[in-house]
Image (tube, rainbow, N blue to C red):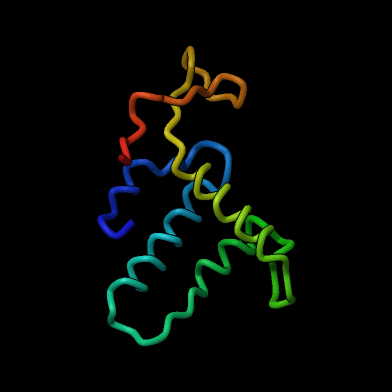
Length: 105
């Protein structure tokens, strides 16, 4: 996220948060690792999560496992590289491009 290479993978047409969650998470990571501030308040990330997952709206106590599951699933959907099979972009015809998955190790 710090190199901003994730921007080329943002999936703004598919399922999930239309790329907005990945963008806000990227801003938080950039601010966090910049070292410019002693404290960080990720308000925009919270607002984005509230929009797509109303169960987390407000400041009530919530289950952290459910929150992390939503966050990771949302990032996965926003950054999932997919191509339409046969020119249609419906859910049933999206296929993952395996050869574009980066090698980590």
